[in-house]
Amino acid sequence: MKIVVLGAGVVGVASAWYLSRAGHEVTVIDRQSAAAQETSFANGGQIAVSHAEPWANPATPRKIWQWLGQEDAPLLLRLRADPALWRWSWRFLLECRAQRTRANIRPITTLAQYSRSCLQALRAELAPQGGLHYDQLQRGILHLYTDEQEFEQALHAAAIMRDYGCDRRPLTADECVAIEPALASARSQLVGGDFSAEDESGDAQSFTSQLAAFCRRAGVRFRLDTVISRLERDGDRVVAAHTDSGERITADSFVLALGSYSPLLLRPLGISLPLVPAKGYSATLTLPDDSVAPVTSLTDDQYKLVFSRLGQRLRIAGTAEFAGFDLALNPVRCDALLRRTRQLFPQLRDSAPPEFWCGLRPVTPSSVPFIGASHYRNLWLNTGHGTLGWTMACGSGRLLADLIAGRTPDIAFPAPAL
Image (cartoon, rainbow, N blue to C red; front, side, top):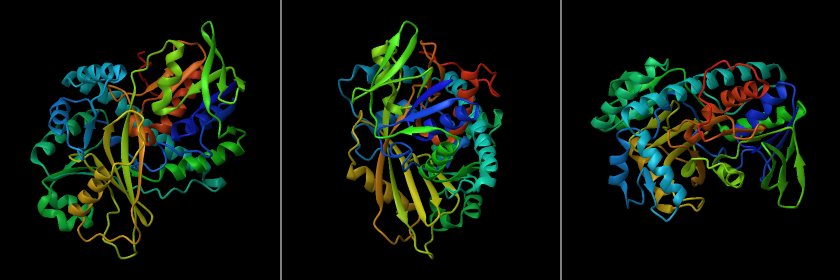
């Protein structure tokens, strides 16, 4: 079957890989000149099953209210006249109920665990051909807490995740420092933490670029610098993708993996996808050899930040700004990343100016992504992964390939509720 994948981020490229391995003729289309140039470019770098608690949980509405108007808030909602955002916000609030949060943790955790195992299998499969080398570390992820209330809430979420097979082990402050000695200077600030030994970290952009190269070797075509302007339908099928240069690209099936931009192509087809962009920030620091910097990947839940060691770089990433499709860097929010880093690692030194970046995460009200069939028989969705696109990419790609082939996937996952 001839399949066109729209989007060359980590989710789109992983989809292309598994579809090609299933025997399909695959073409990937993206407006950028290379793979992984947008949301996958400089994210937090974590393969984080332990980060499966959805944004919509009982504690979030109070926090959002407290953070309104704070330019450096971990989660900043910019109120504006946007009907889609208001509809999404109402559905988000409904998902904040405790029973919905618990219900959503299950598919997120299941898919994240499956995806991590798919990534590990992929590394083993490609090792004889030179392998994938993306500054990956298998040292686990340490969640740290400097606020007692935040720690108590996290222990509850961790207990739910353990019920679904994710081992988030509670730790004392001293145990946190034992796992990551770079936290020693911040020991007095810590109230505790939890640790997921099986989680990983690595550079998503490097991974995606290398996997795209393996895709090309396997026969996948990449149509880059190509902007899709609309999808053409005929009855219950999509028959072509039109480019802004007037080209009409046909296929037997289409996979939509355009992240935050997915709803823009679906709306003219009569599909209102409840998905909005949340701008996340990152700072990448270049480290001298003797810098006191963390090696274990860290998550600071209170400030919505993660820290990942990528060779001689430290990636600090996180926060969320609901500001539509605006990609301008806000200096206040950039400074907030460095300020928190200095609080936790006062002895850290860098050898070059920080590299700041921002990207749009595609967030659903429940944090459960849309993977599977749409209202059209040959239009498939693989989008809405929020902060876990890198974590879920391989599992989502393999899951989708099984669904398109009519095979029963290895895991049960809810069909898109459109």
